[in-house]
Image (tube, rainbow, N blue to C red; front, side, top):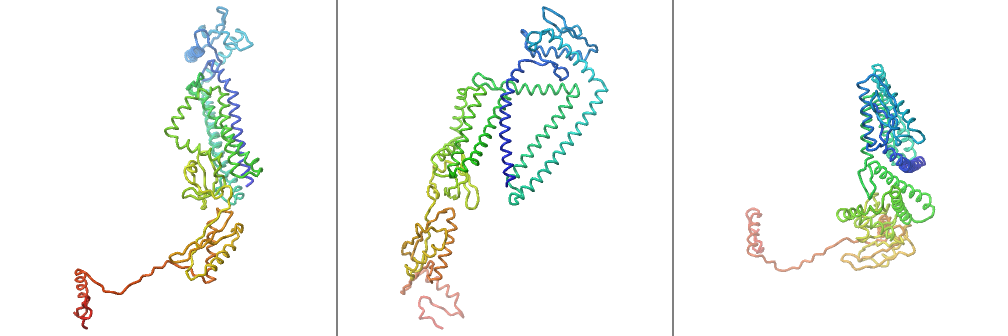
Length: 544
């Protein structure tokens, strides 16, 4: 039990860590990405040489495309490489094989460097990149790289198999420990959570291994490196291009995914905080379970609401721009989400009014059981057969609900008993009170009571009234009392009657219709023996 509890705490702390890391990632990397989008990279065989900025009427991407095409032509059609810098109009110009390549402007320079220094750095990078491109196209390089690629694939396959073996071995050891800890239950809930967590971790690591291996191999060859760069560039562009505008701010898919991840992390964080509040603070205050659950629900949804507002403000989203979304949501509630909204509102009413609480023994329609959980939309009732019934919250407000534990759990039970008319009522009363006094779950204050209800058709009807402080055990209590009542009545020779029906017949003349007489005569003629005729109408005329 201690091991499973420690595992659950570790999973909670892991969720908190993921949420914090996601928030830090958003705060730290969003400005960097926004700044990087203002420049365009110069690419040679899928490798970035440097980045350039806008220049006059040309955008950064247009300049980069022209430079990339010239570099590609030089690699394909030229063996000699000559890169130099010239001054034109007080600006350094880079020439490639005596052809214009680009002009270095103030926007291209790194803070703290001059135009000439920046041009010199770029010339060196271009020369190194072109020499490397020629080298990667030689036969020797391609053979060596192919061998390395095959080795990487084999190593990746071996690591993937090893991770699977480690997962199965660790899961088997954890299963044995949990089985010995949690009453030898092999399919316990902590084991299922651990197995699911390990599968997710293993799948993530395997996916990361194969993706890393494939990316590394594609980066070894100049041709595949170009394809991988183009594919990654398309994906990055598609994820970073604005797809939604709220107010005056455009948002890309990446920003929306990060926002959704932060909101999901907020929900996990709120659940973890409220669970900590329940187990570490409210548990030791002595407050009943119903009040604890009400505090937990209000705290959880309050944290989610306030945290959502803070995240949206940090994100730069104007709250007033959500009026369109709110109107659309209201239309959705009007058409298809009426029951959800009604159950959610009913859940809030149940939390504040508290007509039912966690641990109460209730009857809702044909269902009887103990309230185990109260959610925003539904309430879980555990029946006496240990079957969980999920009841919508609105049902507790729309129909009558019997709450045996409301305010005061002490309840009175009615046990009808019928005895024969020959019994002495005083003796019956004493016998019923004796049967009630023998049971330990029957309260002596208020004391049991016997009522003489009525003179029934077949019995004298009594009713034994007893009080109990455990209404959830009323069915077992009634069964035990009836056993005691039957034993005491048999001991005192008091008869328990059964339903009787008296039939009184009077003598007289029996008359038949002519059709009935004819039918009877025909029947007796067929039944007569030795051809003797029996007259059912005049028996005196029958002869033997």
